[in-house]
Image (cartoon, rainbow, N blue to C red; front, side):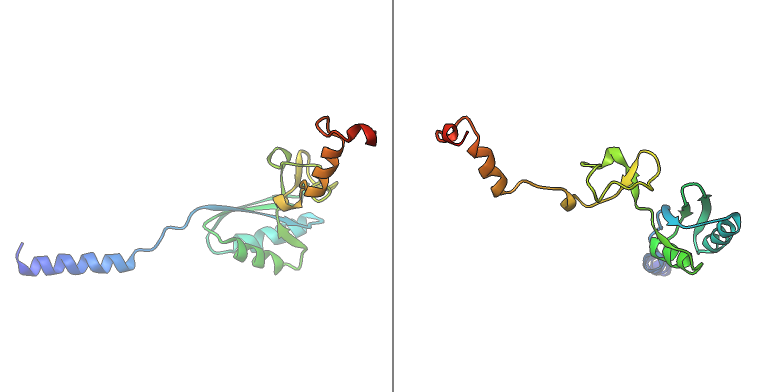
Length: 150
């Protein structure tokens, strides 16, 4: 391998570094779409299967859920679904075992599928404050004035 071979090897090495792209991860995007009939489901499925990178589209009419799997971006799938003029949102439900307080008013939803609740941030739960602590201390056995209160 002479000087020419070395230069060719280095130029190929440098050019291949520039051309490398990150491989996209396979993603699953779940959407809640209001669908009334089979025609609506067919229309949604045709539009979402046309999204670049979509490998499969599953439609569940009973739960009003559409699942798109493939090398897709959630924003693009959401935008394509909105182009059908249907009411669309990302799938808001998670299994109730994953939520710390599944029966908080923000999480509980009558329309949710069985064993599912709305996904809510942890800040929506009620936390103790210093005011709550003062009531606890008021009726505590360690409080010498507790007898006069009771």
